[in-house]
Image (cartoon, rainbow, N blue to C red):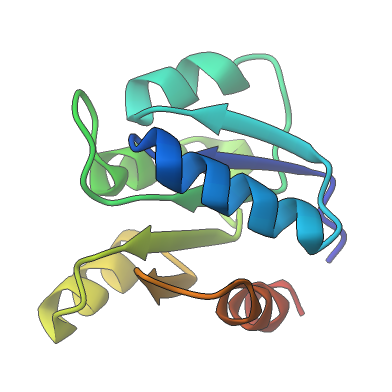
Length: 123
């Protein structure tokens, strides 16, 4: 699958910079950044995204609620979604998968871990 536009959602400015730099190093240049789920939904209105990378714990609308909203949109029923979070408990991973997340990365992570996860879900 070819990915042109990535939406990534992270409330921490430091983590946003780290993730943006990681994505750019992997060759992705069309990146839409958002601070939380509400901001993300606003920023994608009228646009098409090919991949969603989201944090779980965020103010206003967390990653789980964002995934529910995205999955409810017919055009994004099959959108690849990766959740990047500090929540590493097995129950959290299972909940995320049930919501429709395709990949799960636990912070802290390396760009190599992100690349491997993206390659696996985009095949």
